Amino acid sequence: MGMSESPYIKACYGRNQGRIPVWIMRQAGRYLPEYRAVREKVSFLELCKSPELIAEVVRQPVERFGLDAAILFSDILILLEPMGIALSFPDGGPKIANPVNSPDDVRRLKNYDVAAALPFVAEGIRQIKRRMPDTPLIGFAGSPFTLACYLIQGKGSKDFDLAKRFMHEYPAAAEELITFLSDITAKYLELQIDAGADSVQIFESWGGVLSKDDFCDWSARPVNEIFGRLKHKRVPRALFVNNVAPYLDVIGDIDCEVVGVDYRIDLAQAAAALPHKAVQGNLDPSALFESPDRVRERTIQILDAVENHDNLIFNLGHGIQPHTPIASVEAVVETVHGFRS
Image (cartoon, rainbow, N blue to C red):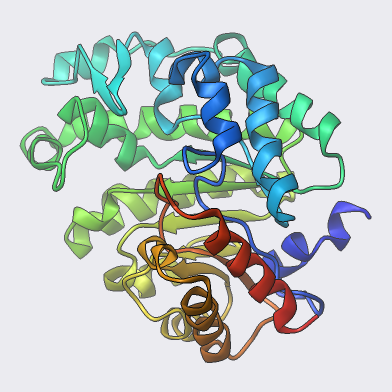
């Protein structure tokens, strides 16, 4: 099967007539015993930097569940390290020892050659494609605003108050930072496509904390610029915005093929607001803790509500949680694949 014939790639372009494709955010992860076995041997950062282990954990869920796409195993913050950022993951969450606190700190960030600094990402992609030549592979990056949130806050946060304050307090430095991060992110996604990624996704994990005007300026504008730079690569481009509902009209104008939809909004409503995009989503990951029968019902509810299935990619509305029952994941995949096959 050529890539252009895969249900996932066809759905990205709105022309999938066959079975509905499904993949799962964070599908390579702690809910899988075979992933936990790999993680017992290495730290999270070591795993992110080992091409062999990247290929192994990417393969695991695709083979176990018969998923329609693989996604690169990495972390959105991995491209911060070569800038001179001290990054660690002490207890699961990221920690930055030298956050950006002032305009001077922005100027101290090092520009770098992504191919030279992040060779394990490109090699990991090549190894995945060697092992799974017939499975579409999704490359990804964090959005410039989401990266800026971590750089400034220094760790995770519910509202990224320090990051928002910085953007308002130092608008010139904030603009400089977003421009710098946009450029590196575009080059990083190009590197992934050149190594073999069949599609790319930008995760706007924290844009949802912004007012609409700020979202347009700090999230949508740089994301749109990055996607514009990737257009000539001719692979589907996807954007996931966590808490997408307030910004649907803005996102409709972004130059991409696919919009990932979080679980807070009705998927049919999002699809209706985005008539020219494929939509991806959006079962609440917490619902997977219900019985497999109830999981099937919820999955069918979403599938039934959406009018056009030719441009639908089924997914969760956020990342799968640790301890999620395997039987629930199997129930989702079987239900989606059986819906119109």
